[in-house]
Length: 318
Image 1 (cartoon, one colour):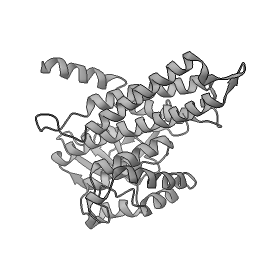
Image 2 (cartoon, one colour):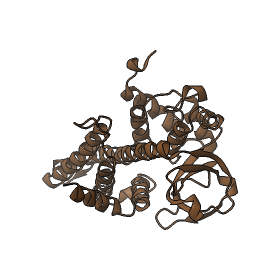
Image 3 (spheres, helix red, strand yellow):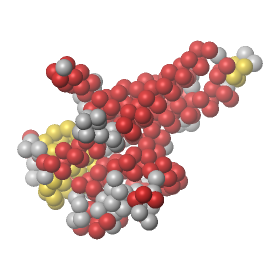
Image 4 (cartoon, helix red, strand yellow):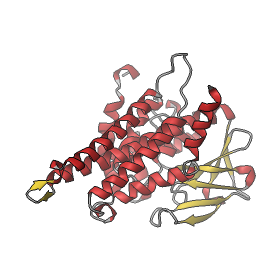
């Protein structure tokens, strides 16, 4: 079978059941479940046991993880396995023997890093270097400090990197491509979370009866749902557009798309919780997990600073 025979949307259909099964186990069992289905190595080199496919095949997988609110660093493991090429370390990620995360803030030279999802459970963490590259570190050699300000159940982690063991180095060019791929996949993850919340909300509005009519019959509710869908579909279209070059044959910047996806997804989740009458903060319908995840990514990119940076770059370019 060649790449031409494969379609990214088919990966989403296959990934849905696998991700649902991963929810049923603990962190290590989830790693094995995801790896055995080929999800961890979808973009990794074939020599390392991966599928060697492009980032477009990871998009629907990550989006499905967002829809199902998967609490596992699948996005980061996919990216790190790709960046490691054909090395034995990449093979360990593809097989599920190891899990990797990515610190979105900090540098190795500064001796600290932060905003690494599920760092306490992961084996390795990728940390940027000031020169432009990155280093893969062993989590066991790092002092971790949990920060539950945004999410007490799945807290963020600050990393003290003094004496950290370096397992591999990633050069500046590879890391630059990896950062763009990361922005694309994060946008897909949060947009998937928004889509999942929107589907749940639309179904609830059609079955919840008030004064003899379903809530979806009310004009204000329909207008809100329509706006939510508009934002979600606009984000999805812009994410898919990133896979194509611009009219000059250049790679498109992912930052505007990521900024829009984070803002739109947060709006959709907040409206979904509101339309559920606050039930989205209950164990019965834990939409708040998705909202917390979006807010954590927003904090990792500066809590609105990303949108400001995009605006500044646009002004300077004209």
